[in-house]
Image (cartoon, rainbow, N blue to C red; front, side, top):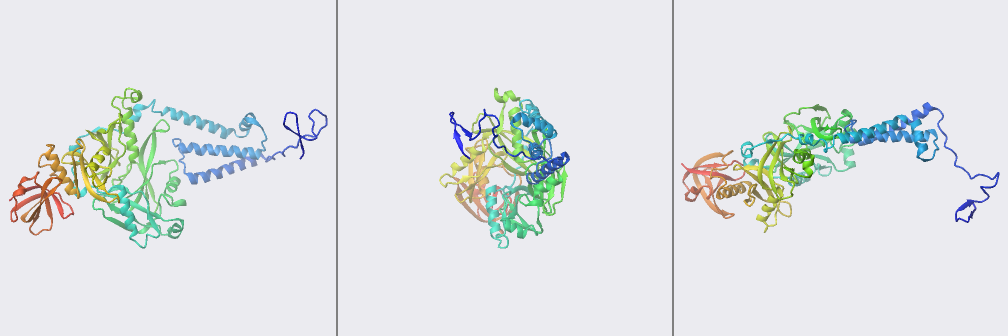
Length: 573
């Protein structure tokens, strides 16, 4: 189409003079044709909105709950879709915001009003639940009791101490699956590795998953045939084969996806991350903690029961009080967050900003302790000043949320790790994040020392209160023995420390040997008729120095499965 330039530098349609009468007008876009019947328009708008809503619900799985932020996104999306459809089906040709809002008022009054109300409710609920106004309530989310560590946390025998961290457990699990020719080409191990107590033993359980979509398509009929059980003490990995495969997991597709499965059965519930556990019969279950908001509309996240889903059959049931075999009800991250609320706000919101009297926070990480039939979360507590010392630590039961604070000034976990690494710096070993144990009545950090290949080479114990006291050993028993000897040398415990959980054996000495370990003399005693040696510290038990083959003695020792056991006392008979 020809154009001619104007004096102003613009363009005009040739043959058109705005000042001349009866001139042809510029061509206009053909107007959009509206759907004539109002009922038809309504049905089309609702149908498209419903289709989009069902697709979004199936894919994103929002909880139909006013306390769930994703619910607001879901409803606002539906309102936007309906209004968009109304624009198209009505043939709307208006220009500018003024015309558009008039149109919305006329054609989309209900969704427009609903969207405005939802936004107002969300803003109001967020303000009402703000920590600025409800600091005391946030501080009360985690009830804290003060405890006595030495009295309440039992000493455990070293053959019950978990010697594997998560990374080592993953390594063993992958290696075990790689040894199975019938599975390694079809399945791989998920990265969950949940720590539980199973029949009185600390173990990690890991589920399998399909290697790819093709493997899923060819194997999904039978499900996942097994799960891995890793003993954290003996480091034994057991592949537990199932008569009927696991069909419901977090990585399944379509209706057998765990989160889709529980969403369709419990559409209004909000859930924390599901974890795999097994009951006492070895049946795998998914534990799906139900989240509730207790402060305002969105604040004060807490757990109220859980949905337990049989991973094989998909049968589910909600329990407000979960069965005793369940260990992981309260997520560790939630426990840490609730304690941080307590530490920050128990003296009020303004104090957390200005005076900061008695303001505390948890340290950078956490670990787990097996006590009784439950798993407890452990983390250190430090001041907000950013120093490298703890003022104490907390233990929280993951099933009941029972929480104890133990006052114990000492090193942070990472400081203790650095201290242990300094003890073996010539070897270049790296320390794992420590466990907290009661050894000789003393709070003690226990950690494994790994080489560059991530293999455990030594073990270390560091006293929490005096972290310059560091003992290492090639075995846990040797490490504990060296540690108790150092505690005795420093006058922290007497020579009879650590006798709980021990056994005694009598007999004639068939063989006795000696060695110097970390500057301390140890005697290794074997009794007649036995292949087991009992290591005894000369510092702890000076009597060992004068013993000879043929002497009849009683040796008190810590039981275990190793050939060399830790002897904690020896007497002549």
